[in-house]
Length: 137
Image 1: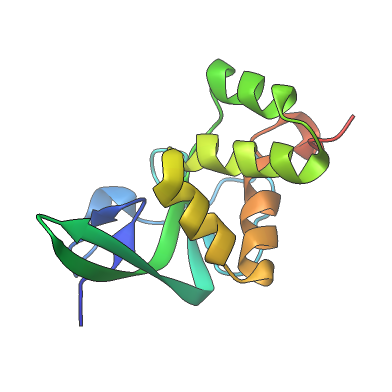
Image 2: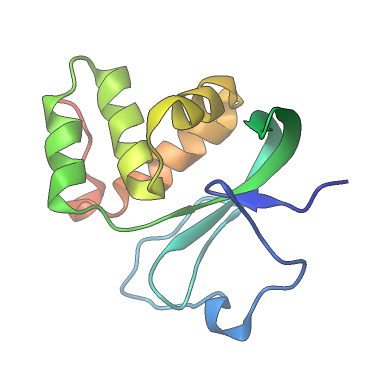
């Protein structure tokens, strides 16, 4: 079995102490399966991991994505989110910006993701917006 992949990078079997979950009362409550990390990011464990295929030097590799780390949104990500047409595309842009994912690999991962996991990710990413603001108009 391949090592777990987070945001396209293989992760070690052990988690360093610096990324241990952090509890702070000033942060919004997260859904089950999501936990704050020491750096303020949120690690989300997918209920239904996604197989992602890639080609390296002509060899097809399959990685199992079981967790995704979401970070606070930056100005460019907010701009891309607000410029997207339609609510679904705004949510997709928000998730890509928060997870630091781009291009066809991000489209494939989020496109194949179970709906419940997708909605959990969007709920977590919206906590980075003031008062958990919605992405619609």
